[in-house]
Structures are given as C-alpha cells and as structure tokens.
Image (cartoon, rainbow, N blue to C red; front, side, top):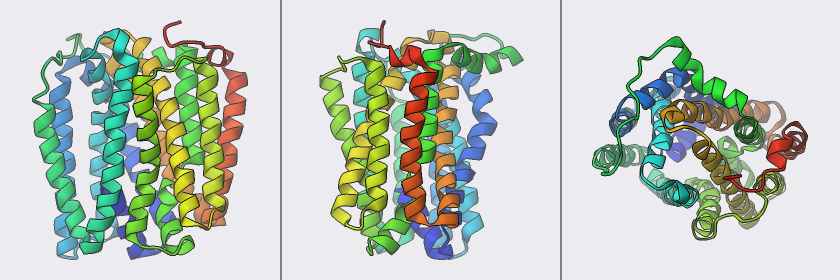
Length: 375
C-alpha cells in the first residue's frame, strides 16, 4: 500500500521518472549503512523484539506521511525522508525475520515453510497494492493512515509468536563478528552464486519503479490500474508458492533456478513492449511466478547451509543483496527511463537479465550442477 501511495504521490508532484527512481535509492542507502550492524544484533538479541520495534518505527513513519498529506505540508523531500526511515527499519527487520523462521519449524520442513511464508507475503502484496490503489482514489492520506495502523498491529502480533527461541548466542560483538556474514557468503560458492544471481537479475530486470509511468502514460489508466499492476507479480508468485508448498521442487535445483531467472527476463521484455493492459498484467503474473521459484531456492539454500548462530549475520548479507536488487534496481530503472524512456529501459533490463543468467551458469558451475537443496 505504501509503495502505491508513495509512487503515485511522487509522480503526481514531479512528473519525473528520475524522482521515482530516487524512492528506491533513499531506501537502499540505509540498508547499506546498517547491514553490518543488523546481523550481530539478530544473532544476539530476541528476534521477535527487534522485528516489533522495526514495525513500530515503520508505522510512525507512515503516520507522518498521512498527517503531512492531510495538511499539505509534505513535499518531495519530506516524503523521501519518511521513506528513508522506513528503509532503515526494514534494514533491521528483513534479515531478522528471515533468521527467525528456521527456529520455528523442523529442518526437513524448511523448504515447504519458506514457500508457505512466501505465500503469505505474496498474499499481502496482492491485497495491499490493489487496496492501496482504491484507497488512493478516495484520498492519499487514507492509504498512509491505514498502512500505519496495520504496521502497529503487526508489531503487536509478532511479539506474541510462541515457540520462537531467542537468538542462540550471546557472544561479544567484535569487528570480526561484523564481517563474519560477508566472509561466510564469499567462501560458499553456492550461496554467493544464488544471491548474486538474484541481485543482478532484479537490478537490471525490475520494472516496479516504472509502473506509475506505464499505468498513466503508456496504458492510459489511473491509480486503480497501478494497484492491479503492482499486485500482478504477487498473484503469480502466490500461485507458484502455494504449488511449491505442496509440491517441493524435485527437478535439478540449479537448472531450475537459472530457468526461472531467464523466464523472468522474457516476461520483462513482453511487459516492456506491451500496449495492452491485459497482456501487461499477464506478463507481470509470469514474472512474479518465475521470481518466487528462485526466491524459495535461494532462501532455502541460505538457511540450510548456515549454522544457527550465524543465520542473523548471513541473512543480513542476503538482505543487502535483495535490497540492492530491489531498491537500487528502482533507482537504476528511474535513471535509465529518464535517459532513454520507460519502454527502452524495461526492454534493456529484460535482455540484461537473460545475459546475467547465461554468464552466471559459466561463473558458478557448482550452482548449475546442484541437484537438490540437501546434496
């Protein structure tokens, strides 16, 4: 909901693709600054409490957006400041949430649990943007106010989770512990290959930041259509994640991951060239379904091949890769669209994604040859 509200609000104020891209950049910078701090904290303190605090901060930032919109005193820079606070909170929340999950389920069920978790997340990404588009039509402040309320409700719920163990270690935080997650990922080619593949594929192939431009200027629609476009990848991802939750991957894992990334690039190309709203929705559905396959494989690889006492730090590095691909990818899309136009930017991104997949198959033969998550 926040993504729809902020994106449409910024584009309405500035009519600038570059300013849309800056939304991703201001979320990315806090993530880079805090990554080395997040991991040791997630391995040292109660992960539920960290997540709850982060969601309270996000709720307060959304409340500031609501009040500022009502009073018409929050311009572009004020919106960026609120988004930066949300980005800082998410820098702590995302890796801590990822490290929390393996403590809730048996190891043998982790792949199915991660698919189930992805299903819940994608359900929210379906309902949120669609509802955000409708609420924005009623008034921008309503979107931000509802989001603030839901963040505070989430903070209450996560702290009440039972069966979640506190972080497994109370070791002293040292400079070495700060860099332990980076060192671990660098020395494990399977993890490094999978997270870097996702980083560069989504960095080049993501079209999320450009959706307001496609909705208004290319497909000639309004906020309601932007909400549907934002929801479409999540609908595809939800469908695939539900399938994976009941039918775990049996085919060679490595080749399946590369095939999913190539399909992601092809769907991006179709979306870039489409002038039909229905075809655009369909291509985003395929894009989301292919993306969640690589997400489940990457998440399961990271968690299964990391010791419990290291999961917070390794998850922080993984979150940095994901944040780089998503937030910095939005900035890259905005800059490219400002230089060449939205359609060429999306088209080049899809082609680059396929090229990255082909290159990574040669750079990481261990990942290409991987047959199962446990092997």
